[in-house]
Image (cartoon, rainbow, N blue to C red; front, side, top):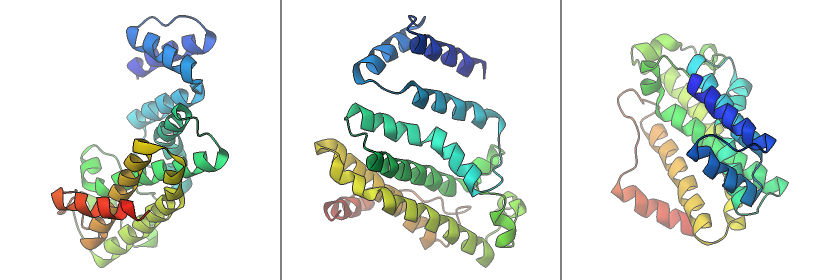
Amino acid sequence: LAGLAAYRDELERIAAGTPPQTPLFVALAEVIATYALPIQLFRDLLDAFAQDVVKTRYADYPELLDYCRRSANPVGRLVLHLFGRTEDEHLMQSDCICTALQLINFWQDVAIDWQKDRVYIPQTDFPHFRVSEDDIASGRWSANWAALMDFEIDRATALMQRGAPLVHALPGRMGWEIRLTIQGGLRILERIRGVRGDVFRHRPKLGARDWLVLGMRSLRM
């Protein structure tokens, strides 16, 4: 937290037009000035990082989305500012992609996050599917757990599909990189669904064969 506070102080020096005190932020100040990057996006990232140190549970889906708004979405928005594509529709699509990627990482790493005493599945979702954190603690798969994971997979899929048209607004290599990123995220969701949400024994990851699938699907976007 102290390190993040020091970063925040440096960021506020940039915002105030005062020279930063470290080489990292001197370089960042030049990029911010060159591309007119919004300082608030960097503030949001630091705020999310600080929150991650102290907050380990999320009451409901809106609260989780608010975390993603600050922890993931600023990255996509900064990329769009670098490419000068900051129309409202494109920013919205970028937010959908970035939030979806964040959620996919959460669903993929349920067991790993538990070892860090972190649970990103919204607390209100557990009773709806008649499961609890005890299922995570014991690595206990059940049909109810599979139903919960299907529900979370559907949420992330819908967000990703809503944001996918952004690829047509991005030039050259960047457009193709985002295509592959989107397809990679969707492929991970397929893998989670393929093991019926049993991320305790089958953490999904992409292999060499998957890249051929991603490439073919990217061509069709």
